[in-house]
Length: 145
Image 1 (cartoon, helix red, strand yellow):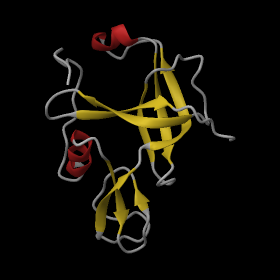
Image 2: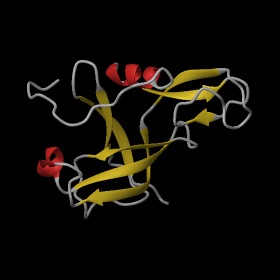
Image 3: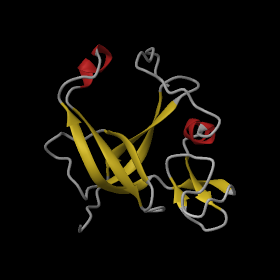
């Protein structure tokens, strides 16, 4: 973790999504999966949206995938983000769970270089001792899609 105090908004985990945030603190990406029908679920919930089962488990997945969509912010949503402009945020389809699309900032790429179909891997930002965020960065391998 950096010696610089993190001053941006922080999440308020709920009972339902707390395991996801605990996983990120350990630099693991945990995603729910239905024990009955094996459907991957994102966003965290208490019941399977496919078969209505309450038997859900948290499973670690490799945070690599493909950019499904993205946006580049040229105007900050608050003064605490001014120094990062412009920055890109992507919807990433995970290789390990294609039904799951996670959202996160994409680092180490300019707005002109980012594109749909780009291969990315997850990285972790330890914002505070209690909160870690998932970010993404490009890999060397490009998708054919």
